[in-house]
Length: 163
Image (cartoon, rainbow, N blue to C red; front, side, top):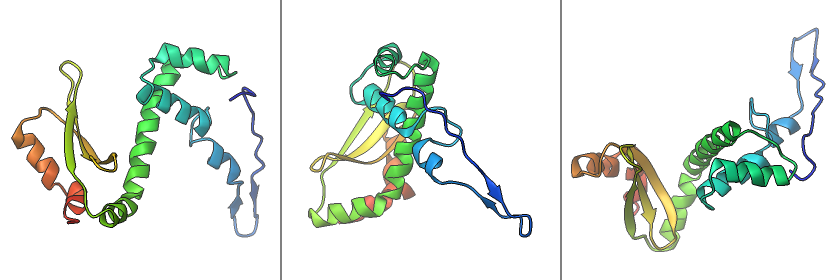
């Protein structure tokens, strides 16, 4: 971020005989697909918004002070993208989380629901001991008929049936 905007030039090679295409993997390791900012900026936006509780304008100003000028709209877009990547990483880590919970001798399930105004509730299942999220889902209310399917759902059932 400190050096500002960086431009990549990628040379794509192809074989006339077999029509194979050869590309470099490095740009895709630094920049998400179809994104103009690197993963470092995406993570900075996500952590600033969801951990440090900063708004889009504050994040935009902070990025600008670090030579990264983006719009508030782009900040919002990157924050949403951060959540998607975080959810995917969490999904890929399920077996490691399950192993960790087994090694620790179990977990204490903590359910937490949050919402703003009339928006759907974000219901999260947390391990209170390790302070990790086991699962979450958006539900219309915190009524039992909405929470029970979440607890019985295929996503969470594996984690809850550990013990």
